[in-house]
Image (tube, rainbow, N blue to C red; front, top):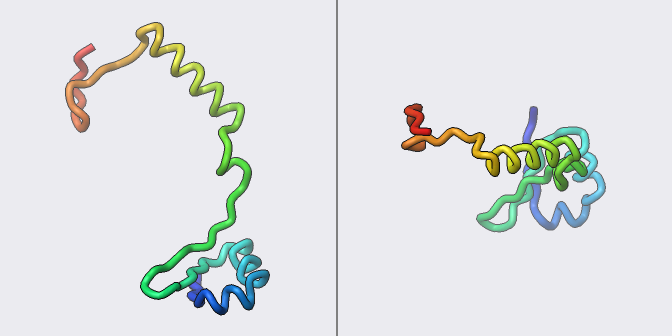
Length: 82
């Protein structure tokens, strides 16, 4: 897939068509001096927790309160201590 790189001036001039490109899944990069920005479409699921995710979080919090957890003695290891 091609990557489209445009200047901020070109983005201002062609904003609707550039956003349409991103909607079609094209990789769009806007260059501003020595910085670059990616244009990526997002959905509501990207912004908010779904009811399913909230239910999993609630279950995890309840399990932690009940002591239903596993503790490890180091971050990368697998030796369980409790």
